Length: 81
Image (cartoon, rainbow, N blue to C red; front, side, top):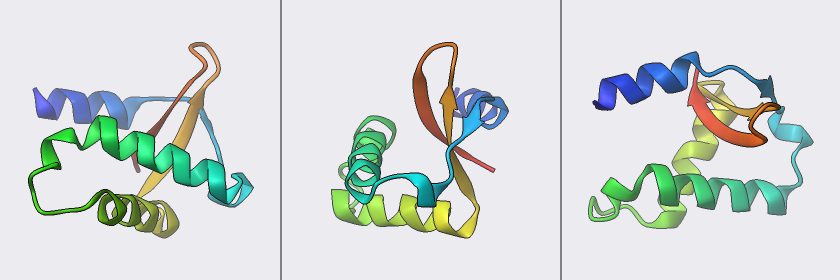
């Protein structure tokens, strides 16, 4: 099931939002929301929320992940590249 979710996320299409175009406070809120909903299973893995946010931020900065906005649904997601 996890592989199916990954394939769905990887195939997700939308408008990419460049990291540098997002206000830092809004980016922080997006990252906090993302790690709380997507990484809930890691809550007992020894990572703090701040560490999870930093990991995702580094993936975005290195180009390993991107933020997509779906115009149809009005939703956003962070997906692997």
